Length: 312
Length: 305
Image 1 (cartoon, rainbow over the protein chains, first blue to last red):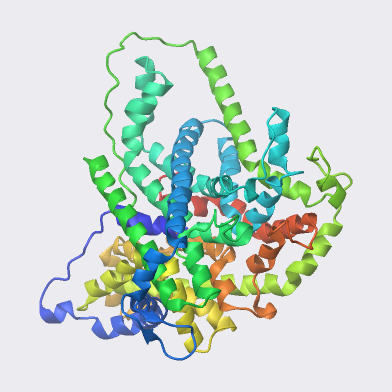
Image 2 (image 1 turned 30 degrees about the vertical axis):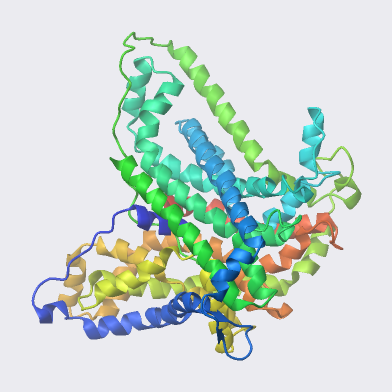
């Protein structure tokens, strides 16, 4: 859940403490500071700094891991426009994120509101909602593979009970992607619920009680009191869910569908991985990764703009 | 790929209360009816929770079924009789080695990264030196770079250092993802009173003593939350171990588990796959139930009780 921290840092305003005083005072602890920071910063530079810069540079080269990288200028970027998988992967990524993030936010809010009551045993009941958080993508893939099984799966059986002839979820080109989304939602809902509960518990109980006494029904309380209070949190939940679904799509796709059927679940992140480690085209993979970076930057800018509006 | 926890400045919750005006007629409900409504709501919360947790119950239940019972139609919900043999079979696929590797990986990643982050956090929070804000900015810039952007170059760096297929290659690149941990601990330590550090220094303590005697003990709540979430992230990490290792002797649990997920081509009975998933999940479930507060606090910051 690193992404929660990341997102929080982005959303929360950083307090900058100023180094003041005379030049000597300002530089008082230089030696010990650099010594103490050294192990951290050196490792960080080698395994994060170099790759970030290297990733940008690599997109201008062709490289198959043996020999020297070969400068190709913008050829990799031109290839983006001739590669038919790229638009499909972008569309899949956007669909996967949209069908994942929107339900995670909406259902998360509704469930959090619903369970935000004081009652004996509520703590134990909430744990039921939180436990999927502890499950890995790999373990949930094993489980859901079986739930989605076309002949003997639990889901199609439940659908049959109400007279629906359930499809073969994961081998259907239309349904495979949303089916993976459902798993992602199941795994991400705990995070959404916990964050919303935290926001809800800052609303004074007296406010809600007063509204109830004034005759405001559940819907009006939700729209007029709860929603304005949790709007800033919604931006955070959306960012967390967005990053979870863009990054998490890899684990699910790689384990469950390998991009299939017929590329229906090939997200950008999975395609990048495929190009890098199956085709060993590291330069082109770096270019694809920059497209992913572009999508993230665009989304975050939108989210931050939304946050500015929400805070107004 | 990144194993940082989630505490920082809590997002500000707006407090404006608008719009509930107009309907002034007081409709006080009799207390009896309110209690009943409350009970019904609690019951509904319980039922929805059970539905959400149902896949997990089903996982445990299916892990104890015989293969033929799992594939009957209509699907059976409860195993009868209990097939504990699935677990011994699953154990053969997962191997004690991959459990050991997961433990080694998780423990060393969390311990090493924690010590880097708490010390780095102190440096960036309380020490005075030029370029401090530059360091903070450098850590901050890498926040939102998606893991796929750095995945390939990180692999190349690790490969060039001849660390692929070794414990250091598995562990160190993950430990090095210190940006968030460092800044999160910085945020926490910045808010600790300056006087605590000053008092220790008046007593003749150096910065290292301050770190060990003052900062680490005072950061306990932060450390608890950080450890809880880092352990969970590292234990469930899949991509980096997949890329950094190909030797079976270095396999971690998630990798051993992943091949059991594909039902189409698997030679492994699904019940065994289920049992393997239970084995891989149970340590985290137990940790989650024990340290639930630390997990929730790690995610939501303070204020959620």
